[in-house]
Structures are given as C-alpha cells and as structure tokens.
Length: 106
Image (cartoon, rainbow, N blue to C red; front, side, top):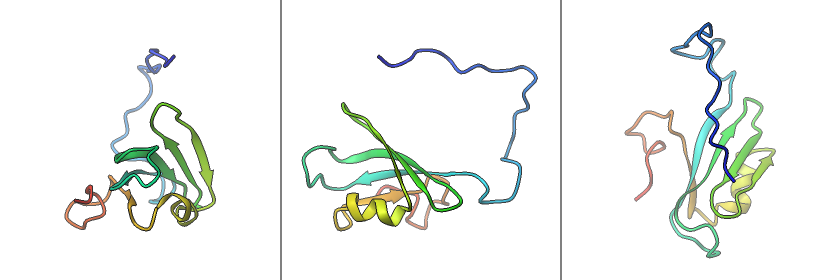
C-alpha cells in the first residue's frame, strides 16, 4: 500500500533556487517514453522515470502494477535492453524546449 505520509519540512532549511556546486554534480532526471509496446507489458507513453548520475550510472523506476527499480552502468546499456530499436526514448525534462530532446516524440 503506498505511503500517504508527507515529507518532513524544516522551517530552518533553506529553499534553493538552484543546486549548489558545479553543474553536473547531481543526478539528472529523465523519463522513458515508449512509442510502441513491443512486449505488451509496459504500455505506451511514460513507462519509467530515471536519473543519470555524474559517473554515467542510471537508475530506472518502472511504472505499473509490478513496479521495480533497476540500476544500470549506463543509459546505453539500459537502452540496449529496453529501447526496442528506437521505440523507447529518454526524455530530459531539464532540456530546453525546441531541441526535440525535452518533448515527447509524436
């Protein structure tokens, strides 16, 4: 059963407009967007959320009834298994709109 607890918030904790430290020092979030469901398991649209760490390691959290979390050495490795020849793509929400990488493919 999913938790309904709210995150603990401290009145003394600062609110940051941007993460401190150099660019690329933190995990970068992304979505896995599936254009076609080859296996009939995951469906289409956003099928997983993920983060890529500065060393290239990727963590994927699969959505759905049987959700799971998987760690990969790289996004290339994850896409070799789950990319289905371009039918699944990584979308980077922090990428500026207009370059095609931050928007769901049509």
